Amino acid sequence: MISKEQFQKELDIIIANAIREDVGPGDHSSLACIPATATGRAKLQVKDTGILAGVDFAQQVFKYVDPNLTVELFLHDGTPVQHGDVAFHVSGSSQSILKAERLVLNAMQRMSAIATKTKKYVDLLEGTGTKILDTRKTTPGIRALEKWAVTIGGGENHRFALYDMIMLKDNHIDFAGGITQAITKTHGYLKANNLDLKIIVEARNLDEVREIIANPGVYRILLDNFDYAQTREAVALIGSYCQTESSGGINEQTMRHYAECGVNYISSGALTHSIYNLDLSLKAF
Image 1 (tube, one colour):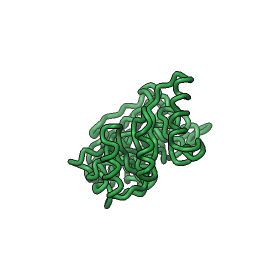
Image 2 (cartoon, rainbow, N blue to C red; image 1 turned 135 degrees about the horizontal axis):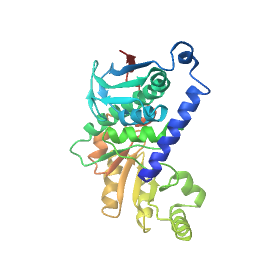
Image 3 (tube, rainbow, N blue to C red; image 1 turned 45 degrees about the vertical axis):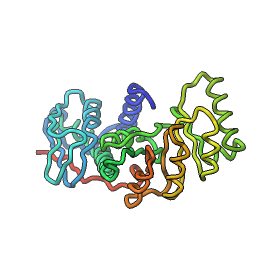
């Protein structure tokens, strides 16, 4: 996984690019009717039920837009919320609050939705020992926010991007000439480039599981689109060789059944690509 420093750089890029995109040469609506010296305050209102996420990010946005803005927190990331709750007050330059408003709301609404869905999945797996993972099926440009939201909801992050973990999927295997060839070439590549990256290999059937475990140095086997019986057999075959992960069309109705087959992880792209924003607003008062 990427370091905290790298992750913060991603957040800094998101903020700078989002403000560039939204504000451009100036917020002319505010500049036209609000004096530069005017001050005010606004509150972040919750108009929905779920898990709050993005509060820490909002503070970073306000600081970037205007270091003199003051944020008074009442609720923190990961807090269950309902209609009528107030997460924070922000006070200072009225122009600055309005400049930051849309980015804060867009980020918090989406992050809260992801955290809410993740918490639901985590609860479904309670007591099984299986953990929920996200994927790279994220919105281009804001991956760091979406993966952050997954952790706020109690899930875990898969690899952040293509550069921080090796993941040999079906196309890699087919292009490389087979499983053993792909794994062997990968070990050679890592050694030649002095890289220390974990290797995950996707299996499409039990024969591929058998071939994978005949090779050394695999960190996790991804069981793609296995049914329950195949998953149980694969877990028994793999034993203590490496970690196991189920993926492929797993939903709220089936995930606990997969967890009960004994896999270590279940990965779900739905955590980030199939969510509905939590209803939040930032209102002057």
